[in-house]
Image 1: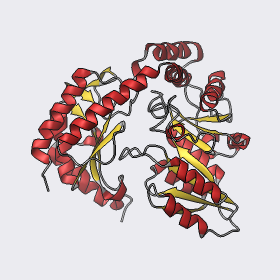
Image 2 (image 1 turned 90 degrees about the vertical axis):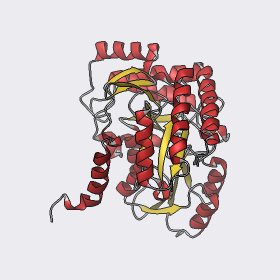
Image 3 (image 1 turned 45 degrees about the vertical axis):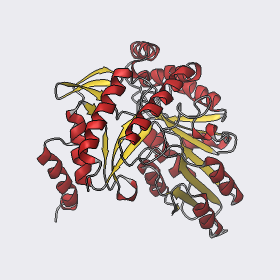
Length: 398
């Protein structure tokens, strides 16, 4: 027995991918041409799996802001937020996010993963608290629960009724009750009934934590996410997000209407012991936030593209995981067919995400397409044509 023996099942998958000559997990973007185009193995390819929902990675203002910050403040902070790593830009972005969300308080982390890891692990403690988590939540939420040491209870995906039953059976001695859900779930693109979850959570004396990583900037009349779309911004307790989707950078944040959120700054280990985001990342995220707040037409364009792609792909006979959303996932009966379908799309010059167990809900195999406001007519035509060709080979595959 050695340390690598446990990876035997992973080796089977890796070798299978290598046998077909196209391992989705080793794809290299050799040259980035635009928000929606890159060269992969020397061929120009449409990027339809990047989560660049608003297409702001090449926004002129964001690039200039990052360049200025790089020139004036250097390449990195060389310290954590708890030490020397808090610059004026970090505080300014926290203030801007808190103002935009109307939640009063905000803490910026180095990544979106660390935002959930750091906040959840600090908010709940073993013995006194319990965490209730939607079964389909992201790995970083699960990891935050594990790091906290608190009892963790799963409830059925998107089921307020399941949550209600579990909370009704809780030990009354458990004082802290944290419920974790997401706005739009990244694998299927389905949306949580946040209003119903908030009602159940607060009825049982709990606090609601909503991860809006994939819905920030996308849902709601002003882009504040699914919580805004459900008119629940004033009723959720914690709101987390990432800079690596609509904000087109790297980093993450947690916001709250509770002033006690500030205690995370000296109780969250992932916040205290990780180098803070670079000045350039913070500056570009700040510029992207300004665009989200002022350029509503970007969001309108995104949803126009969503409508076209979802409608076109559905007409081809594929089984789709959810209603129209910026994530459009096609379900396949097994991993092998999903591998082959992914490979076919790449040969047609379209890159999407392959998602397989154990990283998917219910051991599902799927191809995940991320729609962007930056996708133009040519991009959409090429995507639809590639899916049309894929349908001819794989719609009836068993």
